[in-house]
Structure formats: structure tokens, C-alpha cells
Image (cartoon, rainbow, N blue to C red; front, side):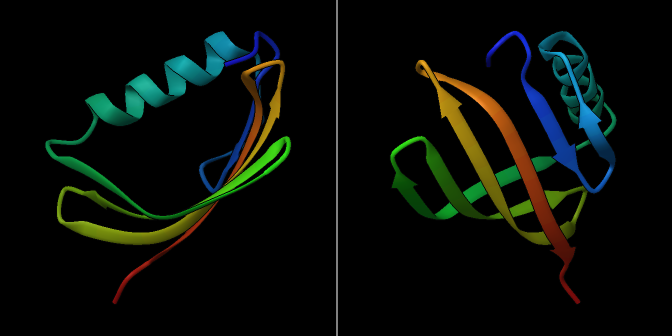
Length: 86
């Protein structure tokens, strides 16, 4: 992650810098008994990537898409969108 990495997620809006994002992600992982992530489709076009994924947190299943912007071999921004199945 770039030092000025920004995360936009349904749980947070424009969270940055990298240290705050890593803390948020660490708390997310620590607050769940089980976590499974499966990437289904990954598209790459220059400095942008899109990942369609399924995420399971403690039995709740989410379908989602991550849109990633890259710069100098590091992620600069991630915009996450997902919905709860069922």
C-alpha cells in the first residue's frame, strides 16, 4: 500500500493514510471468528484493477467488487462495494 493509501468501504469513507487503513483491517479480522475470501474474476487495465469476490464473515456471505487504483507498484486507492446475500 502507498503511504497515502485511501480506502472507501461501506463501513468507512475515505479512510487514510495507510496506517489507519491497516488498523481498520486488523480490527475487522480480529472481530470475527471466521473469515473466508474468494476472488472470482480479476480484471486489470493499466493502473486499475477490479476484483469480483465472495467474502464470508462468521457465516454471513457478501458478494462484492473491489476497484483498485495503482501507482508505482503500490495500491493508492481501493473502493469496495458489496451486498449481503439472502
